[in-house]
Image 1: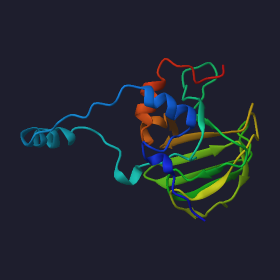
Image 2: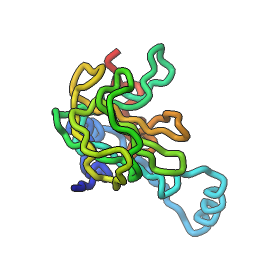
Image 3: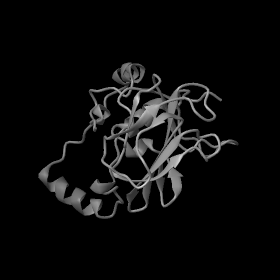
Image 4: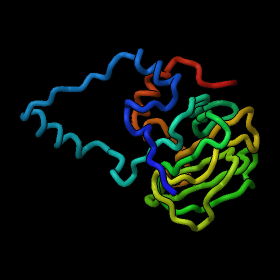
Amino acid sequence: MTAVSSCATYHTPLSRELSRELTQAPPLSTPDFRASEQKSLATDAKKIHFVDKTDLFDWPVDDARMTRGYLPNKRRPHLGIDLASKKNTPILAAQGGTVIYTGREFRGYGKMIMIESGNGWATLYAHMEKILVQEGEKVTQGQIVGAMGRTGRATGVHLHFEIRKDRGPIDPLPLLPNGTRVAHFLKGKSVTRN
């Protein structure tokens, strides 16, 4: 069974609360590129490192509220983002790949899975109520891989979501559709519980 994450478009909210706040945020300015500027832009683009099209991610849930951001420099680092919703909310593969881990051996993470996508990319999904995939299984982007829960060290029902590159965690927001806009808007707002 597969599902397409509707968070990939601006008009479908990550959450009702966040979408209300985003509509109040100032609009993004889109540059007006003339033909002469396009050639310059194409030349400059070769110098900038972009995420390959094969490395694009999608939101792991269709409707949630972000309750905690990526905070690597805290005394107790938080190496992903927390997305809260109702128990058993479907969790979707943010990127296709191979399931390399299912279980609950990682302290505090509860029931979790890890999907390796190639080119050093992996995604981690924790605090799940149900795991619907097995190790070694190939999954596609948007496929339902589990259900949101409260297993492990969790104060409420939510998904802890990490994106890893070459085994190290990185901030997921810049790699998610409209994630940079969300991060920019949330800058200065409290999205942590500690």
